[in-house]
Image (cartoon, rainbow, N blue to C red):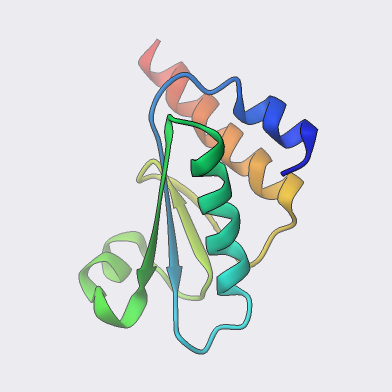
Length: 104
């Protein structure tokens, strides 16, 4: 992770759950999973899961997964597609800030 990404992630002080929905044939999914796991390694507050879509159809339905990689953050925020590191981190931070504001 870049220094800028590490600094942003370092501001997180409450739980963030990142779920990455994948398929076995998706060429972009491994990169999205790797990014989510890197963030989880960087912060004790971030938990990341890779979910193989065919194995968990109830979760695919719950989160409206139409394409992969699909990233769901804190159950309610998310995006589809492979994003560069800075954009991925920005999406996580937006979800974190929205969740933080709702709880404050």
